Image (cartoon, rainbow, N blue to C red; front, top):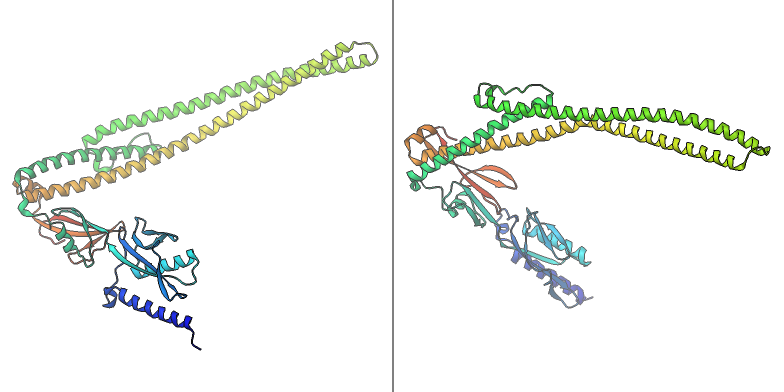
Length: 419
């Protein structure tokens, strides 16, 4: 039996298939690796739903439009929310979005979603190039093409003796400052290691043992260590004095309690006798009341003494706990300071290495004889790397580039050996 509704569905399915063929990326048709989305890419989304009742396609314009792949690799879509996008092909993102819309909107079948890249994220070219900066990405981009966008490698024709001499002087001064800072940090690290080990003296590393500058800095660091040791000893003495004072207070409270306890026992015995006489009619009721008041007052004062004694014992426990924790806190502070200094040493060493490389580069490219002799280099050679997803990897001229990549060109100076 002819079913008009079923025929419309089949017609819609054929039309969907034709649209999929039309929208199929050229790279896929040719067997090339499809482009995978990157952070900062913009995608154009169209969403179409087949209406069987009317045998028509209905475009969901509220969902379609341009969207940006965010820095977290997700794209925020209406109704669906953040959707993982970076690293996916447009077809994979379309399928994921369709499934999300089906679930979010309660549709019987996923809508037809098409995703196209409307704008690629930028690339960044850095290092020894003519014009470092941000440039537009396009599929098929390689390192050599990216360098050409940045004006190519730094040109030898840009040499200027006066400018390079100024650069040499500036770099030399920077190196002197960095080396002095590096030395200070290493001596400070030696002092921190001595404090952590509980040593009375600071021992310099072997390579600094003969340095007069290091020895001069060592005196200052030892003075700091001695000052901290005195401060620690003063804090311990303060806790000990506080505990001793509290112990004397407890002794006084105990003596006072013994005296008051005897008074209470006497008052209770006297009250018992007076109560007997009162029962026999031989004592006044006012006398009984006075003795009862005296007993109650003594009992209250005994309770106050017990409370004060308990508080003093608690204060002693707190002081002893703080005294025992004093060493742990000091160790924690020293460990944290050591980690900070260790990081500063690494950063200073990296800065020194970078500035030494800059000095050598300037020395070679400047053509200044004195600088070239000091650098001991002869031949500039370029090396390339790509920073992607926070990791740096080596590259060559023909390495493919992705949107969001940072292409770094470095001028290495060698004496004839290939890198």
